[in-house]
Image (tube, rainbow, N blue to C red; front, side):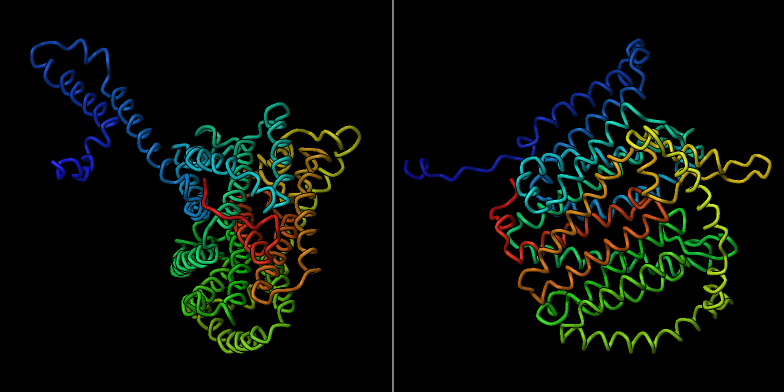
Length: 520
């Protein structure tokens, strides 16, 4: 009797635990077999004509997809760190696939699908942990205000510029929709990064694992770029030069992606010295850094190489106060001096061209800067009067660039990008939209100044200087491209800097960022 009373409960079977979706699915399959298989054998075909097979398959597929999303939601809502890693990888992959599919006339709505996949759990996590995000990222509130201003313009004051190369395939041709999704993606990435660090019981371990995964993946993509470069698999002839583009559709977004990534990797090289030495595989770090440097140089971007060199030099100089950095910095410099001639020789052996002569030719080529300057002068001349306050409307600058560069007689491909994020913001959104964007970096700068006024922690100094260097790169390149939203670079910038920003705040043990407990 007592054995029966205290017998442990048996766990429910798989069918019992998942009956709420297995039973409707089984019923749907049985009805489908009945309508399309059994009844037609007896001459009853009106049901098959009434419910087409395609329609039923769409219903079944939608039902299975909804159930899958429910399980995904239940699993991911307490794991923001997984969402952060997914967001870093997903956007460039989706952009790569989407570009090829749209040019082929196929629109699978990959960008909206990615936003829906990420946004629902991300918004739930952000709302439940909003106070932590406010305190951990003081500039996030201003970014949300900027996003709200952008949404108002998207709804009520939109020029509806369309990319003619992809507009025929559906909604992905809308530049306004692309920009709005990009800015939203950045905001979600910032919020999740803050929660992933500040609510993690072991934030340092998560940061190390995240970096380990990023090193593996970036090394693989860089190797793929290098191997495919001579065969045009990952390269493109542009302006008379063979330029690497990696998994992107154009060399410029690839170059700026690599520029920001290399600054981050260089920051990791400085960070994982001294007391942090054992936290990561240094062999992997060195190999990934070397491969990404080679892939970056193959992009042959004058702007990216110049800005990266300046920012990396500033990083190194700001960290020379550390004896460990001085020691390993000398090793890195000696290694670069030894390996650089070998790399130049290998490049000439593979391509039959001198890398230094190509760089010299790229510096002499100024056509790109000339037509960009003409476009900027035209747009600035039209920012006057009431338009200074209201702007000309969302994506109006893109529409005008298309008209200015359209040359029917020469059959030249028109441009859609302003190639200057500041002018584009001011022209489209007016002074308020422009100031919202500038204020985000103003608050980041205030936080950085506050760090400098406190007692310095040598172990996090490389992260602080990496934030500064990446921000400088981002702001400078915004003057030459739409880095505010364009392609993958801004998403990577906001996610990586938010991770470092919150980790630095946590190490400084500011009252605002000292939290306990997991994600609710």
